[in-house]
Amino acid sequence: MKKILFFGDSNTWGHDPKDGTRLEKRWTVLLKELLPDCMICDDGVCGRATKYRVPDNEETDGITIFKKKYLNGESDYDLVVIMLGTNDTLNCNDYTPLETAENLRTMISAYRKMYGDTKFLLVSPIHIDKCCMNHPIFSELYSMKSVDESKEFAKYISKIASEESTFFMDASKYASPSPIDGIHMDEEEHQKLSEAFKKEIISILS
Image 1 (cartoon, helix red, strand yellow):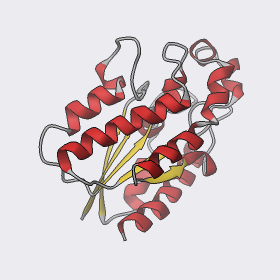
Image 2 (cartoon, rainbow, N blue to C red):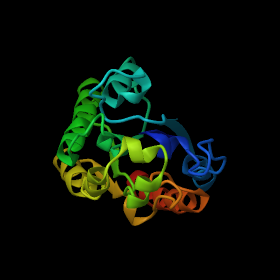
Image 3 (tube, rainbow, N blue to C red):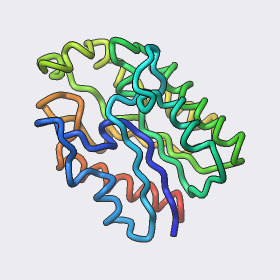
Image 4 (tube, helix red, strand yellow):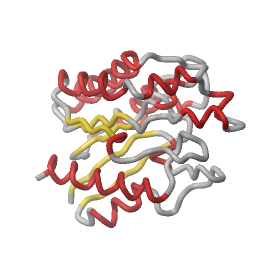
């Protein structure tokens, strides 16, 4: 059985744009049904960025927690999937898409330094929609700069993926955020993303 790690933020955790609860039919759960011969290990945390500029919950600091949790013994993952970036555009972080991509490179390099050549799939996240500026919470956390920069992720993350000989997928080609908050996916979009992941993973592990 192939073992796959999915390391991400609230769109991996399954944040429901309607009320912030956890969706039962999130894409990682659906993927377990679509790939019954794979062990899906999902590690998604709301608010997680590639790296936080301001000290916060350690689980939200991608580089720090990735090293702490997954560079502490023998790795038995056949594939490591990382989908981060949305929270890098938070006003308190304000990383550029290039900085986000370089932070992802740091994770890959650290992992491979310990475990040797490992298959990685870097996923640029879905775009942030400008309707988030009408949301009572997210309008305070993000800006129009966040919206614009989210559309640049694929360009920079795909370049890092190529340079690091990893696989790449652009989630924005398959799913979109809900018009409710402009950040998170509803169940229909989770379904679309799970099907895209299925095709990509079968291609990588075949």
